[in-house]
Length: 209
Image (tube, rainbow, N blue to C red; front, side):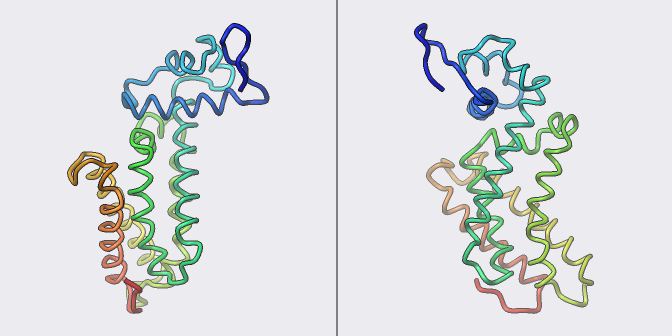
C-alpha cells in the first residue's frame, strides 16, 4: 500500500481485500459485531464506500472473511504450540491454552467465530472451526479409553474440550479474572490444567501434566 499525492491509499493485486479484513477485525474489537459497518471499514482503508463491494458481496461476507482469518491464525498458533509436543494428551490439553490466547489477542474477532448471522450466511466459518477441532482427532483416538468405544469416546472428548476452552475464553473476555491483557497467560495455564484433567478422565494412559 503506497500513499498517493492526495494522501489517499492505493492498492494493488488484492491488497484492498486483505486491508479490509484487517480493519474489520479492528472495528469489531472496538464496537462488536453489531456495531460494525462496511462504510467504516472503507473509511479506515481510505477508499470509496462502494470499493469493498468489489471484493465482498455484502457486510456478512466481509465479516466471514475476518472470521476465517481469525480461525487461520488460531490454527497456526496451535500448530506452533504443539510442534515439539509428543504426548497426545498434552497435544489435546494445549488446545485450551491456544484458544484462550487467541481470544485475548482478537477479542471481538474471536467472537466473530460464534456470531450466528455470520455462520448462517457463510457455513465456511463453521467448517473452518470444525477442521480445527479435527486436527485433534488423531490424538483423541490415541488416548480415549477403549471401553468407551473409540469413535464415540473421541468425539465426546473433543466436544468437552471445545466447551472447556470456550468457557475459559468467555470468562477471560468478560473480565472475570481481571484485565484480559494482564491475566491471559495465567488463564491459559488454568485452562490447560483443566484440559489435562479432562483428558485424563477419558484415558487409561498416563498424562504429561
